[in-house]
Amino acid sequence: MKEKITVIIAAAGSGERAKLNKNKILEDLGGVSVIRRTFDAFSSSGLIDEYIVAAKREEIPVIKPLLPDFVKFAVGGATRTESVKNALNLTTGEIVLIHDGARPFVSKTVISNCMESAIKHGSGVAAIPTRDTVAESSETPKYLGKKGLLLIQTPQAFKTAKIKAAYEKAGDKVFNDDGEVYLNSFGTLNFADGDKDNIKLTYPEDFNFNANKETRFGTGFDCHRLVENRKLILGGVEIPFEKGLLGHSDADALTHAIMDAVLSACAMRDIGFWFPDSDEKYKGADSMKLLAEVLRITGEKGFKAESVSAVIMAEKPKLSKYIPAITERLANALCVAPDKVGVSATTLEGLGFVGREEGICVHANAVVVKR
Ligand code: CTP
Ligand code: MG
Image (cartoon, rainbow, N blue to C red; front, side, top):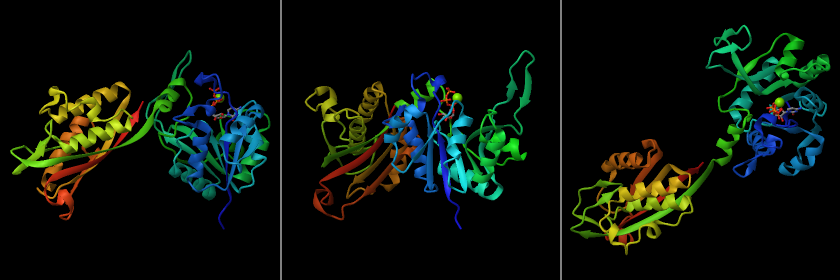
C-alpha cells in the first residue's frame, strides 16, 4: 500500500534578516512568489497527497490566493516549532515532510530522498556535508572541523505518528528544527542527501540574485542569395565553395540569424534596425564584429546569451565537417562553452530556391538570461 504523503510548508516567519519589510515568502522572484515556487516544487514532484501551509493568521488572506484551493492552512505561532506543531494537528498523511517556505529550489530528488528514508527508517532529514571548516565563535574559539559535519536543510520527513509524539514530548521547548525534536525524543535520526542548490533565502543578496534573473527565448531567421565571386562565410568560418552569399555585409546568414535571435529574446528589434544596410559603414562588414556589438548593446541592458541553436538550410556544399569549427568560433564569440551552441545543417531535398541552390537560409533560437 502506498502511504499518504503530507507536506507542511512553514511560512509564518517575518523574514527579518532579508530586510524586505515584509515576510520574505511573499517576495516576487521573476514574476512568481517564493511561496508559490516552493509549492510548485512539491506539486511538480508528483509525490504529495496533502498540502498544509503554516501562515500567520493575518497573512492567510494574502497567501491563500497565491495557491490552489486544495491547500490547507494552519495558523502559525511565534516560533517555527510552534508553527509546525499547529500544522501537524491538521496532518492526515502517514508520512509528513516538513519544509521551509523560503526554500523554493528544492528538487524532486531531494524530496524523494527524504521521503524514502522516512518510509524505511522513520526519519529523513535533508543534509549536505560542510565544504568549509566549522568553528565556534566565542571568547575561546573552538574548531569543530569539517569531517562528519553536516549542514541541515529541509525537507525533513518523518512517520507522522512519531514526529507528532516527539512534538508532544517537546512541550514548549524551542528547537532548531524538526529533526532535533525527533532526536530529542527517540535518540536517533536519519539523514538523506540534500543538495547545494536547496538554499534557504535568508539575506537580501539571496533575493537580488534570484529576483532579477529572468530567462528569455528568442528566434531569428536569415536568408541570402548564392552567387559567384563571393566568399561563403557561415558562423565566422570561411567554407570552400564555388559560390558565396550575396549581401551588404559579409552575408554570414548563420551569424545574422543568431544576432536576430538574441536581439529578439531581449525585445531589442533586429539587425536591420541596428546596422541598416543603407549605412556605408556596414558594407562588407565582418558579421562576427556585428555579433560582438549585439552582445555589447544587449549586455548593457543586463542580458547574457546562454545558449543558441541553429539549423542551416543549404543544398550544397556539404557542411558537416565544418560544424565543429563553426561551433567553436560562435562559442568563443558568445563567451559560452561549445556545448551551448547547437548547429545543424539540412538540405531541402531539392525543393524551392534552397533546393535549386539559389540561396541559403538559417533559422536560429537563443536563450538569454537577464540579471
Ligand atoms: N517560520 C514559521 N514560523 C515562525 C518562524 C519561521 O513558519 N514563527 C518559517 C519561515 O516562514 C521560513 C522557515 O520557517 O520559511 C525558516 O525560517 P527562517 O529562515 O528563520 O525565516 P524567518 O523566521 O521568516 O526569517 P528571519 O529569521 O530572518 O526573521
Ligand atoms: Mg527565523
